[in-house]
Image (cartoon, rainbow, N blue to C red):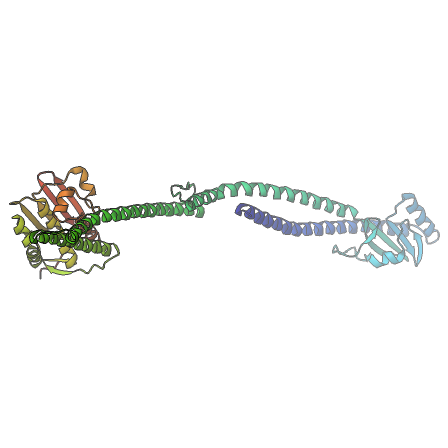
Length: 461
């Protein structure tokens, strides 16, 4: 059963029970009031009747009084009056006996009578209140018909039932309309959730109120945004992984083909000593290339899996000297001059990661530079930059150079032993250090890579 139908049923049951309970209380109070009024009127009528009878008795002699009484009341044809003298019936046009009257009769002696509920005579759907009084040896019974009070009460009860049914119908209609408006966002939520379960994360729910359902709709939209964003990231990640694996396979294919080719040549062809040495050199060279590629892939994976960053205070001068020593051989091979500068004595960062960043950047600059050029390493404030005078990067390729295996000049990169992983590793390291990577370059003028917020200035004490 739908929630709307459940709520309608609950509201209708609550309204019905409330109306019935309040109606029963009101009807009981109304009935009690009507019966008391009827008893009060019966008392007044009986008192007047007793007064007239006393006058009749006082005005006539004892002789012939019985006959006079019969004549008076028979002429009036008043069936509500019953008169007994001693136990002898003198006047009675009713079907009730003296025993019936005595059983329910209320004696009036002082002119005061109770209006509280008491036993009544019931005959042929009629209901009667009986008062009596002993007057001069006579017992005068006065019957008062209160049937109208009960009939009116039944009419009122019928009106109450009809009105209650009308109220319940109106409540049912209003409830249905109100709940339809209130719960309509839930239908939209259900539809959107169904679309999301089927893989469509673009569906949003209109927030038309500020109540709990409106808040729920807003939270659902936020959740849908987060799910859509995560799905997009996962899709991109899977695509990048697929692309990276494809590129990795392609990068492995070239050295493996060379190794297999030279090995086959050594096994099947008679070669001179120089030719054998040359073949072995190529095998060694390509094997080294595979080793470097494997090392960089492992580093890339370890960074992606969440390698712990351990920041500590590092002497800036010692750091730059260590990096200069590491790349000195490469600098001499290409006759490149390295210039270092820093305005901080100490920095706070992860030493191993920041070394990897700078060495990779300098290595890229050396590869991109021709002999006699210069490379600068600069640490100023909270920023690190590496600048060269190399061939530069075309503007349209700047956004792609940090993708794994992406190489601007593939032939030159392979010749230099590169695989297009350096900047990918640098990007991951910078992200782990909480920094921002910026690349600016002009073809033929050089490239400058700046990393902001990758470390904090340490204490100089």
